[in-house]
Image 1 (cartoon, rainbow, N blue to C red):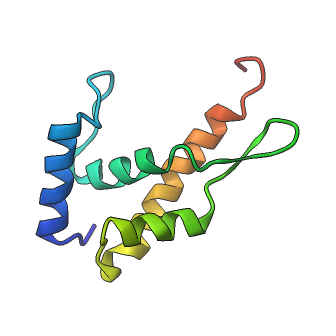
Image 2 (image 1 turned 180 degrees about the vertical axis):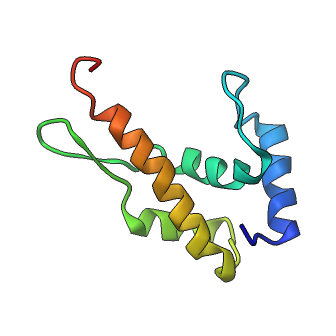
Length: 99
């Protein structure tokens, strides 16, 4: 993914100390930074008037990148990766009656 080693090490340390990953599923190590960022964004989903989820605003993602001091050269790829996770989450969140 082109992430610098310092960012990877910070993500690994956070995952170990904050237990941001769970044992209910397996995640490849190279996806841990994306997953950790997505978890931090999980309360930012926009919910419509009828209860449907629309996604996470780009401003929330940009703000998190700034807070986390994500290197500029890594942000584009991380944004793409977070949006892939978000797409999957939206499919599940917007299922009607468990279908």
